[in-house]
Length: 342
Image (cartoon, rainbow, N blue to C red; front, side):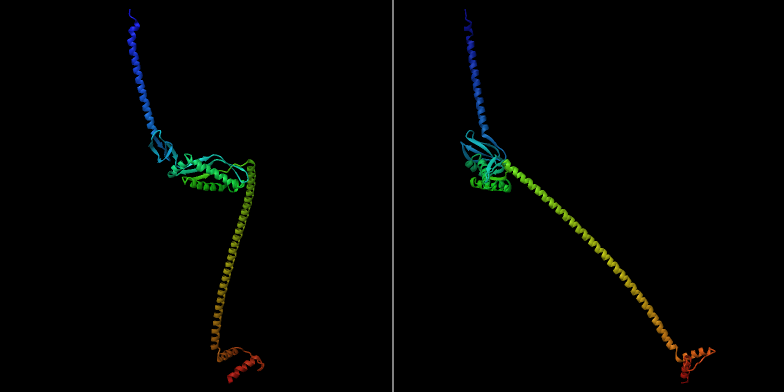
């Protein structure tokens, strides 16, 4: 009698071998896939992209290399060289809150300080080598904090908060640029610095508020006085203008009257002259007539003519009365007769 286990043994051995074979193939395929993935990862890690406005700096085995790359696709040695992307376009940094104390012991809190800066590419590698990747913190943040504290320590709270507040930015910026030139060899360019007014203790702020209110009231009162003064000046100017206008009108009226009177006088003078000339002309005519008449009478009334007319007149009378030679008529006859007898 044949055992069934002995009959099926060869078939089971063949199945196990096939299983080992399939397992080996899977392992080989898995290894190949791992190698492909690893090679792909290595290749991908060697390729990197630099964005516009940035440059790439490289560390080989931790040591900074002199090479920098511009925006675009670049290659590097995987696992040996590391790349760090640094922004070279203008960058705005917001500094953390800075607390400083003034000369008279009042605490000031500066918030939201902003710095716009730009890295000079040719100075980038020396900057990173000297100050590390976070060179901005050393050259900008720490220097701004230091300059603010120095400024506050040398000035009173009224200087910092009121009278010299506008000088803070100029002072800090000048000293910041000088520090960058001295420490960082001018590797960073400061484009703008914004420092907001500091927060001061509430009681002091309230006092300043009261002073500001009083100052505003005084300003309003002063402005009202100026407004009133301007109104009075305007009224005065208007009154002067009205007076000058009335004066000008009066002068024109007087001038018109003068011209009218002069015209009347001229007309009267002309009429008188015409009348005078007319009367003189009439007088001259009458004088001429009289002269001519006298001249004619002189020629006409000769002595013989007179005697003849007298005789005619006497002859026409029928009666004559004589009262002697002393009478007027007798004297006339005597003269006529006497002159005739002669």
